Image (cartoon, rainbow, N blue to C red; front, top):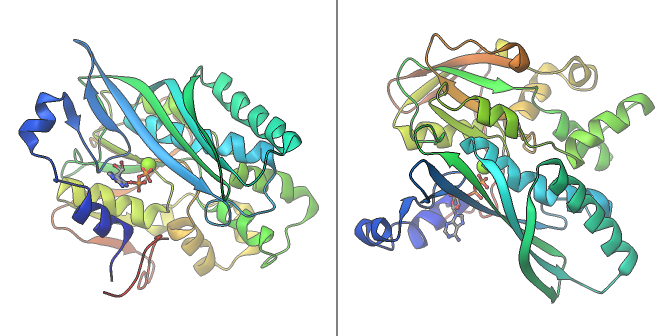
Length: 318
Ligand code: ADP
Ligand code: MG
């Protein structure tokens, strides 16, 4: 099986020598939530790009406002995962037609998200074709403490913020695979369409957490990135996974766990921190779910986790 990550590793990683990258001020290249570039004495510039495509990243019926809001939010989430403070973004927009009411709503969503996190649009590109939105975000993070995927340590606790799986529940509703009760529709669909990047949490973890990632593809795949990058394994206590009561009302325990592990689109943070880590009062929605261990396996205690395959754009047999 080849995955998008095999393709990136084969064709786009390590193509340029480490000396060249160092001379260019590249501290961290492809492989983490953001690249880190040398900036000033105390800070790195963190940069990340994500593309957002109709029927791949959002269902066709998603409102233009939500598309604009989420396209920037998911990018800012990568800054949150490094503990970076957002500064600027660019927007490359491909549109099937110049539909002004659509553009008005899209830009309203985009700029609502931008002003919430004090980030300025500084350029982009506008072309005609199938709807596709590419955002590049840039932010600043303290050199000493940037949170990376390769910095988990043996004995660290593993933590997640918020709860997992509700965005997937929203997707199941949109796909008409389940029917949410009227009172659950708005909060659950907001989890899918209006994720809020956890910038404040990411920044508050600087100097306290060792490694971090944002949960875009589901905990199973995203924790695997931390383990691979850090050369460690993990043990997860599945009974400790934060899954809302609401999910349990609609899905069996097995299906709820699968939504939490491979559903994706949660945009919570998963991080590792020394055993003495204590969430602050503001971080009360942080849950300890396991620990970093030696080896390279992830053990899902209390769940038969065979075939836990995260979403992948190019998963195919070679
Ligand atoms: P995330 O889910 O955090 O946005 P991705 O899964 O999109 O991260 O990408 C994983 C890593 O691979 C990132 O560091 C990203 O910059 C890098 N990457 C993805 N595609 C390419 C590419 N075509 N060329 C270089 N690096 C890439
Ligand atoms: Mg990410």
